[in-house]
Length: 289
Image (cartoon, rainbow, N blue to C red):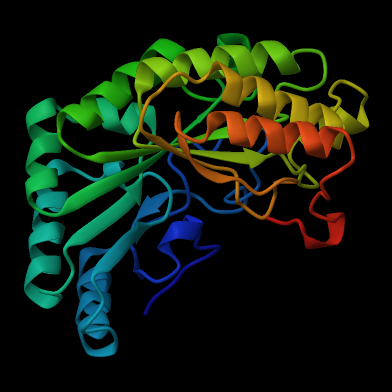
């Protein structure tokens, strides 16, 4: 398989075939992210992707899931995406679920009928980064769009019957705006109504603009107890009835995997125990990206 650069996939795609169709991220201006800083975004040559598909059919003939990497594969033209999904069906007939990262911008670049077409051809899940529901935070971290555009993108994906997983980032607003960030993020999530919410905790990467801001005393990352309070405020504000909520990424201090609203009170109690020092947190040496 032809892999270029730092190929990233969601934790839930650990057992999927990884087919790299783009290199890097089409936006690549978020101040907290260092994943693709040294890589110029490009769409891979079609013959290389086709060759990888043929190799995958030999290596993983029984696999049922496939993840299209890297960041923002939806930037590929509709015609080529349709051709790719049909090729996947031909080469890997056992694959019934195709997933990818999609930004709000790239989702909105597709018409509702185009997204529906992709859905009928096997695209069943989009991982989208909200990070924050606070527009001032989104602007400061270099994210494209605002909370309204994020919500519009979520609505378009869901209307096409595509499972939507939305990522939020604890700590990204800093200490001063921590509570407001959590409250506004919960409000945005309530309007987006994703099938799944994944909360990660900010870990500053050396050389990124946000890390530089911290070194210049222009950004202050909340301490673990502050991050727990932010997490509590976030969960407390979510009123969705049947959304899967996960904070079990390696970056988090308190692993959580639950169904909202069913498990909400139980989870809040666990966070309170952690804040009281009666439940251990993930040690720093075990945290990671």
